[in-house]
Image (cartoon, rainbow, N blue to C red; front, side):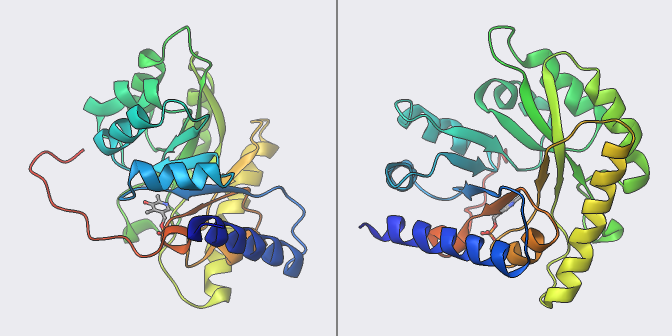
Length: 235
Ligand SMILES: *Cc1c(COP(=O)(O)O)cnc(C)c1O
């Protein structure tokens, strides 16, 4: 077994163990966050059975995708979205997790081709307010969800959150529980959703305990990332 295959197997076991420990009955999809990893590394993970990959930077992702066209990968865009990058994101990804305003959603819907299936989107929610700039506030989320549901080439699938990086399990769970409560409130309003994208390497067990259906794990699978080289043209 390659080391990636082994790490993947260990991670799947940790996910299964967390489900068991917290009696979580939902299906949990592993999104392998491959930012800063090479196309070769992605290919090795794919060969070991991993088919869902998450990327944060548009140009880096397009370069990798070009080298992996023979692989049946579901590409998830999970990074901040600049409005001038909506077209490549809409056309080269299957999912976008980081939609937090209507204008971006409209641009994604406009740019998605009719020949493609609808783009799956999650609304990014910010439950820790001042901690981070990204994400819609819980107060705005119902209206935003209702408006996004109207867009023709998007399918609203759920919520995504990146809570503050707390270390205590109870504190982590408390944040994820708040996300889950908003998720349930949306469903109670008649908005059909099936995806709760929450949990990263340091807190995926807490997220699973609170109902995550998709965990986004990078360093916990591939090892520590090299620092990202600053560029003058960020994407
Ligand atoms: C980088 C990143 C991850 C993965 O983080 P790890 O701590 O390496 O698992 C997950 N989600 C988002 C949005 C990210 O930017």
